[in-house]
Length: 224
Image (cartoon, rainbow, N blue to C red; front, side, top):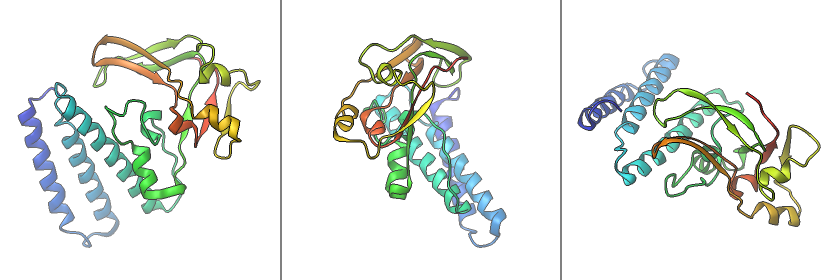
């Protein structure tokens, strides 16, 4: 992102041309070719993502949608290649079906994977009542720092789940009874941010109803 936008766009164009040249040789190299093509695809995806203009909200939103789409494509590529189950680790806002900020993330990685894999895709939302975690203080770059979250407010998802006697647990909500389903379908967003500028922040968000209503949820008190 330190390069001028015009330079980043030129690099993205060249990376896409390189991918097209390699893809044109399909069928000529077996396993080695498959990896070469995927590596070239990853480079093309990354350089295209970096053509976003941080000053333009529409460009930013389009780039975030593209980012989640290609992340889903890369997971699908690996799953098809191995033929095995895959465990994907990502932020709740990526693996959920709907992000907590749909204006910034119009379609998530989880939504793209659900489109591709159907019920074979199962997202798991993670959350906790209080504790500390490591994150960066800037969206791009920044330093790893420790952030501490106080106890959740009464009535929040985290405060309610923290009443369970287990320190750490998973809750399978796919077949939840009607009262639990009603509770899950009520939005109780929780956001904790450490900011030094409008674009410099580390954020923790609790799962939205679209996540917790169809996934497992974990509660506990993680420490640094």
